[in-house]
Image (tube, rainbow, N blue to C red; front, top):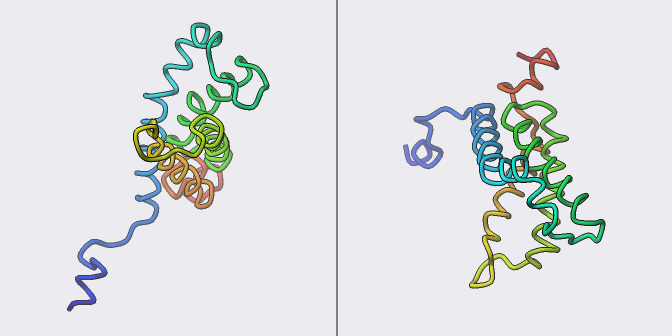
Amino acid sequence: MLKRILLFKAVPVRPDCALLALRLIAGILLFLRHGTEKLFHFHAMAAHFPDPLHIGPVPSLLFATLSDGICSLLLALGLATRWAALVVFVDIGVVLVFVQHLRVFGRQGGGGELVILYMAASLTLFLAGAGRYGIDAVLEGKE
């Protein structure tokens, strides 16, 4: 009985539903908070966008727009999920290392814990894929 309670056997394990929830939550939130801002205010942001890799503010903004504005939607849809997750992971990794200088907690943290959560979600989706309820599964014929 204790084992059944500890393992929460009352609710069945559904990995594909979990991947769907992760894709929708992470993808939609990333798009709404960061993607729309970059897509709809690209020209206004281009002049002052950070250039952590010294490739220029416009190329940096283009990559961030690809990540937050396009790949976030691909994650939510489950289309090209592993590629989209890789792009998001790299972009957010650059933010963590070169913009926030690995500061996660404390007064100068600047929301680093949210960056870590986005990185964890994108890494999980890169490793696991979209699951059964994504467009990738339809393309593979697993629907």
